[in-house]
Length: 98
Image 1 (cartoon, helix red, strand yellow):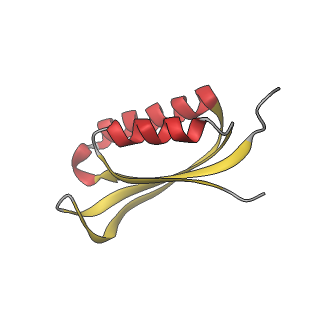
Image 2 (tube, helix red, strand yellow):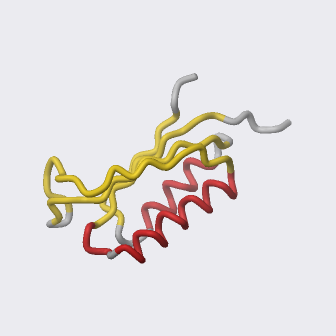
């Protein structure tokens, strides 16, 4: 039986000192990973913003919001990859209600 696709949001905060090239590589990596396991619907770059509280001595971060569709198994894998990727301050993956 085919897995039913659900819609998810993935919110990522990157370190500001990564540089444009590294930031682009990371966003491309996550886009490719999402497309490999589902369908990327959109990426919203919110840019550099002040954090509500310091994280790892950082006071600012670069914010991205990914909207995608995938099966129910993929979000856990995406979170695993985000957790072990250098340069990420915070991430959150949530299932959107239909």
